[in-house]
Image (cartoon, rainbow, N blue to C red; front, side):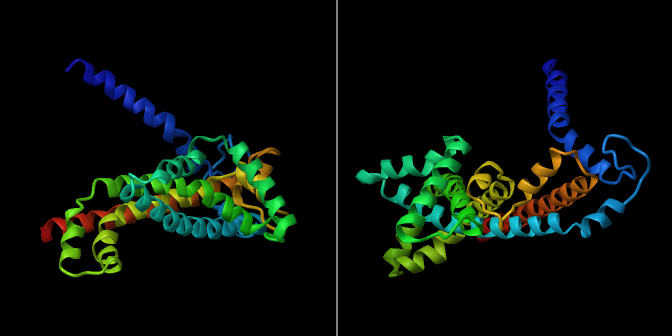
Length: 270
């Protein structure tokens, strides 16, 4: 019992360390002063100024579009890889596939970005695709490392799933495709949603890899923010970061509510 106050204090300090800077950023997004560290009154003018900043809005829209495509591709490819890793454990190539899939998770981003840049240049010289660096190369690069995380999440869900459910459906005459879409897919839906959100966040947040594989016509939001921060933090960036935090918080709450309802419905059916 004596350890509880100490653990509680450590927990509070940990949350303050993690979320204090984010809370400070949100508060100073409503600061009337242009100096982000000096409070001079409440104002929402930086949100209005953000709506007129075409560079930030264009970069934000491009990042969201790329992140959505990357998340969808990562879920598709990661699910296929997870099925192979779980269902074909005894195959000779499974270990090699597992190493290839998980390698981007432990490899430095600088190495990933440089290697992919060299790969894209070599492919363009050999087959003429992809032409230059832009949105396509960013999507391919982000999918390369994002699908590794999705594979790990879906693989864990599949490994703990009761295989007898699929076996019963097959014994009753259901085709493999019907078994997958009617039984397997609903059971792994929470993992797919979690993987999609994680891949979306990883793509939206990436700076290092995007710097290597992007071109003049494709500048993501982290690249714009990084280039502007080097010259001084603008209150408009605080406003944009606040909107992103609100968007992510709402998405997490909605997804958590959906997963909770699915779990309750599954328990009621049982």
